[in-house]
Image (tube, rainbow, N blue to C red; front, side, top):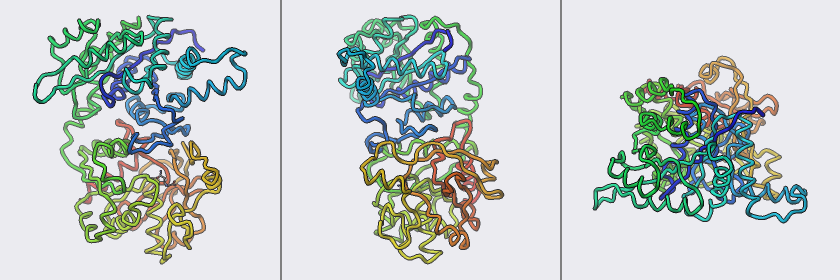
Length: 544
Ligand code: GLN
């Protein structure tokens, strides 16, 4: 461990959940990193689940998978995208993880016979994990986003950890309250009272905040800033605005223009170097100047629950499509299509001709599956660019086997355990896990190597023959059908050579029909769009 003094910024939320702490933390990290500092970001989630893998994405949002196979919160995805770096399990902490460690330590006599108590042992474990991650990355500054909102029971022990760290070393810890300032329609005026109360709640947890970032429809004006300063004890120079922005990628620039980071560095007694956000600035400019549109249909189940939840469940897919579209100066118009419609009315498939490209993203379970298979068939036959992600690849194989190989009733064993043609089968290890009820953290998870077939569209898109991509699934392509499938025109163009598992299929007699067993969306970055998404969008824009 190096001797340098590590600094910590805790970001806590006031008034509402979903206020934008994740994007704010990612933005602060990006600006700090651009000044030359080594920065990492951690997320604390207050629920008891050990990871996000066992949670319904409709309720919780996307399960973001890291290279080391952790099933984390979607905010880890935001951090990776903003920082353009790979993070891992040590960047993510839940109440479940913290308690498990403490209980395991107790069982192995690590507390030397002491009475193990919620306080201090839980906050101490939290602090240990924060410091461990900071050391691992040799970070000058570690930003820790505390999930939830101040005043909830759930995060009180995490706030206790913040209090202890700040008390032990005040000049090494800064606290930022990201709070929401509503503008009630009937008043037409931005109200500060909820944030004043959030500040009080934070004080009641023994924590004074060093900075407030005021989320709201617009910039905070001076009178309200002063009011907030008096009520919270935070100097007006340390109160900043995070107004709504069209694209989340604008936020680092909005914060940078206000001089947020110099103030943070001053608080932490770090030397100030200027931020260098030129590449980011031209990227944001490109977003604003993107005039073309790529009309992309995303087909699946669950889509009747409203846009809000959806965009959270598939956030990495959405961002990956956007990154690729901006690369070609295009905005994306994403339409969510409920596949059950095609089961009831196959004529509705004709509407798919109105889209430049079709995506079937990852998923689980039976609902809407036949409709998805029909839509894939339509995309294949009508030569509409198609990108199948995980389930989207498996179902493309099912469709092809049924309709081109004539394997009636071909299916994935996930849906039909008794199918005569299990073209997608369960991996034997996974079968054991499922039978034993071991669901948490047991899928095929994280980064695996994949070898690409020379000359394939995929290999050309990647510009490489060896790649590494992230997985999250239990079922696999059944190698028994490999030869038959290839004879009929679906090519296996990506294989994990260690396990001989099929990772990518494509159809050569088609402008773009690619299915991946992995999730490429997790590795797309704003300044470095994923090659498969890029190629997909390129074809979508050319063929329209
Ligand atoms: N349900 C499929 C499996 O478990 C696909 C998973 C996914 O799309 N992430 O293999």
